[in-house]
Length: 496
Image (cartoon, rainbow, N blue to C red; front, side, top):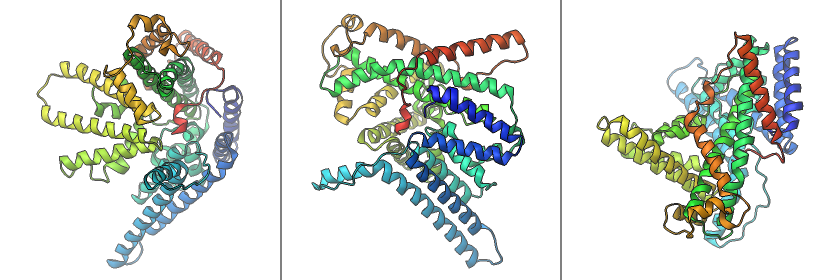
């Protein structure tokens, strides 16, 4: 079920919301159970067969968590007994994480590894068709974080219904954000979470509407242009420099509005239930460096990679060269997490190189250059570098990515004037107008560079006239976004 569908907006969400607060009057446990079951229905709406997989994952990880906790509790004894208990606890953690990664590897990477093995060894192995379960990367990483937090004695509550809700909570289940157990469980335990808060309802609906507008009015409007250029390259057409940049910019902005739109909608829906999810975006295209970009883009994934991969590898504690190696390993695995393909690995490698260069530059120029000069120049270079990496990310293979990048930077492109692109058909293979694309790109860039981040937006109460005006604006934009519904467009991060 998609957030941008009639079924979700007019049926599922109202029914779940009303049921939750009705049951909360009787019992908080009933309300939590209702929300967990509703979340399982939300997941099963796509493919009921994988509800069992999700439930199995929840039960196994919860059991491992309890086992790790029990193993770690102090008992009578010293020295060797305590040391053995610590070793057993660590072995349990490793086993649990390995089980999660093996499940993820089978569903997401089995074909990738087998295809590459067949190519290298000239074999013909075939494991049949495997359908990738929606959200498996997100609920796997969420539960790995729970296991590590349990091992480090950071988990304080073990209510199974709350744990199941923590994993399945439908606003974040399919495409994040990636959650920490400690930031969610206290919210499910608070009595105030089970009473209607009209301020939260107002802010939640505003965030949901903003995200819906990002998705339907901008991301879906940019999609045909990105698909047209990248699809043209895949079919063998050599783009002009203008067309290559147009397609790359269209995808760069489509991905931003699609994913940040989903996240805004998720945060807004969660707020209707008095639950605050972590902010996942902080105007990333305003970043003045790649380091700054990764503090702003998909922030919960960046946090996970830092806390559970980069720091355990040694972080920056073992010298510069080791820090650069850790950055490369972290970003390579971060790229592979997004998808089973060499383009994702190459994208991760590019960002690893970017981060390494950025850290070297910082070390060499610390305090020596004026921020008035370095910030705008750094912002321009960062945005261009990010666009180039998104081209690799979006392309079907390295060859097509190379064709796009060469055309973008004037190395190998079809000769045609900008005026012809502006007034003619894009790539001469679609009915898309270059002039229309320029308008959308201009508006989209103005949005990402000039408007404040959505996390700062609040519904202003206290003044009746102002509140009514804001409510009217929200309703109008909601109607405008819903009016754009055609064939529902899945969110891009569903495939990752």
